[in-house]
Length: 64
Image (cartoon, rainbow, N blue to C red; front, side, top):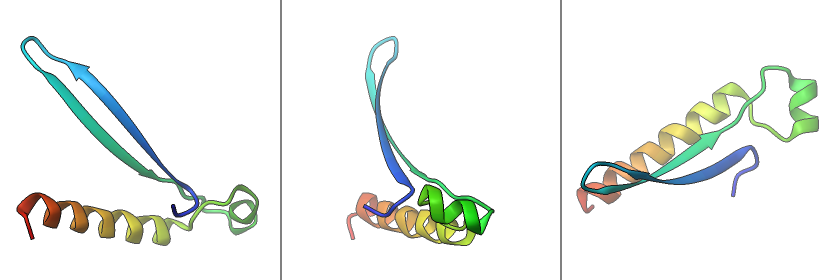
């Protein structure tokens, strides 16, 4: 797992169903000094990783 990334899984009850929602968070820090201490990505890295994940999920859902 890439540092500065976490996954949250939730079960949400609706009137007649349950929804499973998986959220992936890509944490970043604008400050390079703090970023090295808290092991977070730069904003650009976090955006790139989020876009890669979105593409992967779209392909998976489309059956490619």
